[in-house]
Image (tube, rainbow, N blue to C red; front, side):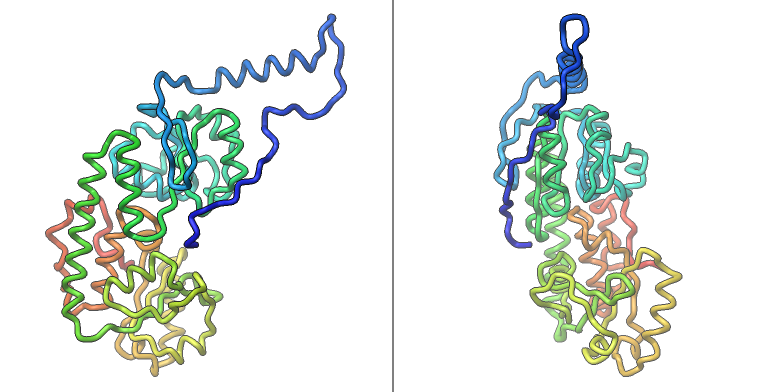
Length: 345
């Protein structure tokens, strides 16, 4: 995941007609008429760029971006969140499935999932800019969009610092640097406050972070969640080169986590079942001390400003003695409309 380069192989252009036998009609071929009609349709579909500038995206690609794009399609939920955080919702034409934050994002036209983009739906929205992510968006779909003249700007944030850099980069790209700078300043303030508070702790509790239920999967070193656990003053028991390692129940029990954190799409019903299963093993310190939690994964694994929320949430769970229930109450304005605790009932 650390390699930011990508191998690009050339694929046939969408504009290349498939070999076929010409059908003569009135002295001209039907194929010629079809080609003319096809390009005429493309002309109608393509956005008109009054003025544009060539920029270099995070993958080192040159992209011609209009000066003030007004029909942006977000190709990942994290991009949608960032656009709303930058107060650019009025310039969004579409987004991918699971772009569910803030709630207003649910009203956007959907263009497939971020790993399976629907190129036809994207084109139908007549975007003047698509914003993509390297980790997930299929290269073939991106190439098709570019072949149709739709600019695609790609980002690739891999850690919290890179997320803040991306926020400011997109702020500059879309002429809202004042907003992006303010968001990043607020994030840095909150991150530093957590660092300073954790620095005074005499013990770093061990944490097992379980994503999903069956099989048991955790998070390795090269993930947002590992970075946040470390910054929040914990020790990730699954640290290592494998991004998402699998564990047997016996291996988790043997690791004796002091804090057990679970994320689940099924939320409370499944969580209560899993919690009951873990409670059978009283030798686990997290069980003995009632430190098993279910959390919203979206504040921990999406490359958005809400990673600061996730950091504060983990700090409260890992060091409740240093982070009281109202420790961050004065900073609601910094986070905007966030689900304050991040811990699900």
